[in-house]
Every structure is written in C-alpha cells, then in structure tokens.
Figure 1 (cartoon, rainbow, N blue to C red):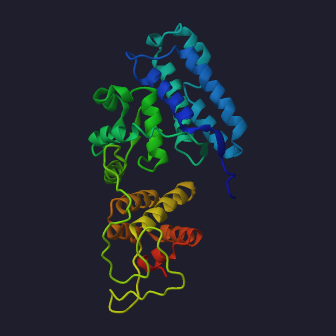
Figure 2: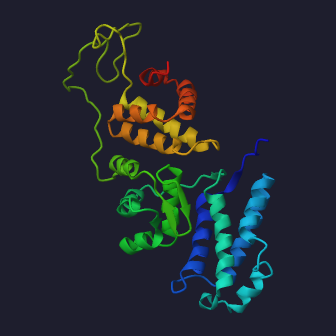
Figure 3: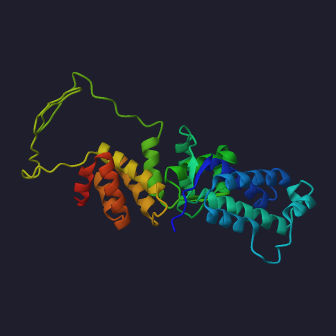
Length: 324
C-alpha cells in the first residue's frame, strides 16, 4: 500500500526549533531555557497543527507512539502534573519529566528528518558559508554538536543553529538534524560548497568586445554570435564527433538530480550523498570526478539520472555516463 504524501504548511525550521528548545530543557539543566509549561503549550500547538496537515494515519500514529512513550512503568506519569511540580523552573525537573520531554523532542525530530515536504524557508545565504566552515571543524569527528559550534562561534547558538542547520539539510550538505546535533556524512561536499559559495571569492567576469579569442573548430565566436544551420564536426577525438558535456551543463544537471533525489521517499542510503558530491565536483570544475561519482551511484540513481536528463534535455550527460 502506497503511503499518502505528507506536505506541510510548516517549515522545517519551525519544527526543528521547537525540538531544539525541548532539547535544552531536557539535556542542559544549567543552561538558559524557557519555563517548562511554555514549551509544553508550544508542543501541543505544534502537535495539533501536524494532526491537521498530515493525511497519513500511520505517520501520525508513529509520531504519537514516540511522543507518548511505551506502556511501561512511566505510563501513568501525566506530563502536565509532573511539569506542574517543577513550578515553572526547569531546575526542578526530575528524571521522569526530562524523559517525557525527550520523547516529545524525539517525535518532532522524526518529522523534521522524515519524508514530509516542508513549506519553503529562505536560507541564510550571507552567513551560511561561515556556518559551514565552523561545522567542518567538527564534521569528521562524528555528529556535530550545537554546544561545540556555539562555543567556537557564539553567533550560531540557539535559534541561529536551527536556521543554519536546516539550511544545510535542505541543500543536502547535512543528512539529519536532531535537537542539539546534526549528522554531516560528507565533509568533502561541504568543503566544495564553501569554495564555490564564498562571498569573498572573486566571481568570473563576462567576456567583452575586443577580447582575444583562440578557437579550434567553431561556427561562431563572440558575445551574441550565432551560426544558423551550421554543422560542426569535432575532430578532437580522431574524427569521432564526440562531444563532452560542459561544466555548466553538468552542474545544472547535478542540481536537478539533487532536487529529484531529495524528493523521492524511496531513495536508498548514499544516493543523495552521491548526487550532492557530484554537484560540488562539477561546480569546482572537476567534471571527470563528478561523472565518476555518478557512475558509482548504483542502479537506483542511474534510473533517476535518466529521468532527469530526459526532462531537462541533457541527454549528452547520459552519453558521458555510458547510459545511452
């Protein structure tokens, strides 16, 4: 039975930020956090909104199962009562109360990193490269923790952590974000992304009239030049007429591929990582590296590549990959 699509009017950032605030309550008794009752009311509002927007009953049942916990010795603990005992101060939260909040945070994380499609949220373009650089300091050591990032760069603490971490997930640079930490499986792809999106990096300029052109086999050269009806035979490969895909075309193709894979609920592990890495390599001017990554992407990814190439008119990429 095919699951019904989950399309939310909420942004990933909204849900993830509520999870981060709950994580601060449950895991950091000495840090700054809101009164427990205020967070609980926010969670109730979010739960009601999700119940209205999610059509998949199985997904809602899984959310409830995580949030409400198993039928064990804690089942008779009423969250409202135990939080009332905390007198509005998180310092008085006991083990059972923190465990209850952690369960609710886990349910939110389940939605944040699940198969739902979220409402668009403008990425923090100006500051994201700086954030990714900080993340790279810790990415190869395991999960990246909010506490470590905030200690090194305090401007990315709290809600700014959530906003930037979710942007990395949306771009395919991070795999998951859970409350106070996230998983960045491909540090190399992040490095390439930073290299290509560094606001301080000099951007290439356009060619202007009067510039010198050195060409081999061409029908028209120069800004605005055209050659209607011209047929050009490429003899660089012994008269074979083979044509190599340009970096720009390969980058555009990989961008569409990342989007397509990200939208597929049946994507296997590693497919999105391969697409993101290939895009980064293409943008860095390393087409052979990008094509090599795509060739090793597996049968599922090959099928998606054929769909994308046909859709955007980039069959030349399929020739380069040996798929056509």
